[in-house]
Amino acid sequence: MPLNQPEILAAPSPRWTRGGRFLGDARLHWLEVLLDEAFVVPGTNIRFGIDGIVGLVPGLGDVLAGALSLVIPFAAWVRGVPYVTLLRMLTNVAIGLLVGMVPIAGDAFDIFWKANRRNYQLLTRSISQPHRHTWRDWIYLLLLAGGVGVLFAIPILLVVWILAWLSGIRISH
Image (cartoon, rainbow, N blue to C red; front, side, top):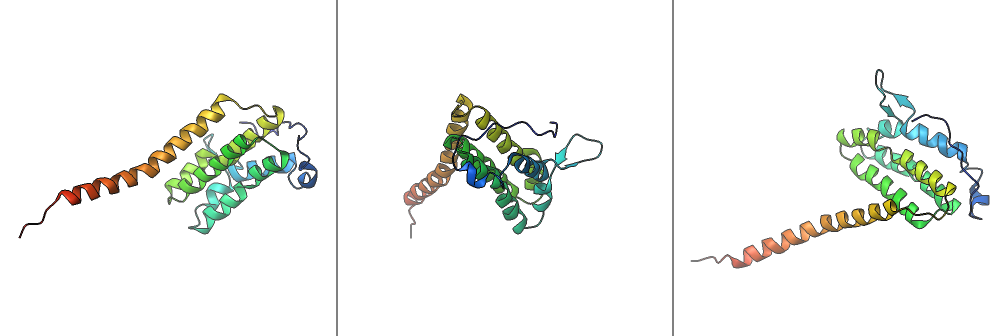
């Protein structure tokens, strides 16, 4: 992906006047590049940013990278993007943060996941096509909700199964 800044149209939200200077197009693009694409692995097309580097610091690195990754969704909120887009952005950050906490493998995941690039692209799409949700936005959220539901259901079903199994065992004397 070229590092040229795409053009972002005017913001539809009155909140934008309060945060426009700090959360301007150039700064958000700069932040996205810094966090996800600033460096290149020599001899490859693999790009990474300080998000992948900072994440190597146990505990604090992932929290700091996660906090920096919230700037683009915050800017999207200030600009008045639809809530479905904000939810997708926050999900991208959460996935990067949660998987990124796994030592080494999580940092490799961060390099390829690029939550900030995804969020910046969602922001530019949402601003250039205001209030247009695609079916992919809704499918993404439905699949995410289903996956989270399964993850929560597995331990509950396991406990129920263990309790049922234990109640069927009789200790004889």
